[in-house]
Image 1 (cartoon, rainbow, N blue to C red):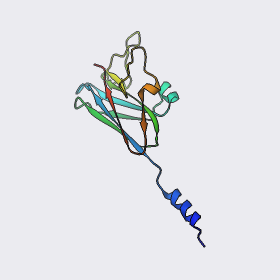
Image 2: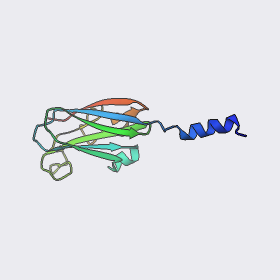
Image 3: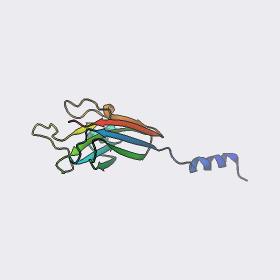
Image 4: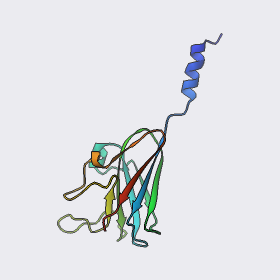
Length: 138
């Protein structure tokens, strides 16, 4: 005999886990100015250590491009972007550590002295679509 509680348990186990999508619209991209590198970070610790959860490389074919991260568990994620003008795969800086390539973060916080904190660049993702905008520095 199957009990109603057993059926409910099986249905809950079979239900797909909630997943969300993060879409980042990146502006001020220099067409043909180098690959746009987008990093997604799952926690303040991984953001501080620059350990990406996921990354996307986008061709700079227009002034605005969109990065999409699908299948994300609900939570808060940081997003950092740069345009790799010299093709070395990292954000280049001058002798005093100031970036020499265009960069930006989700929510477009000020980044006058170092990269902004996790909370300033975090985007909350639920079980639907979350949108954010990033304007690369000139």
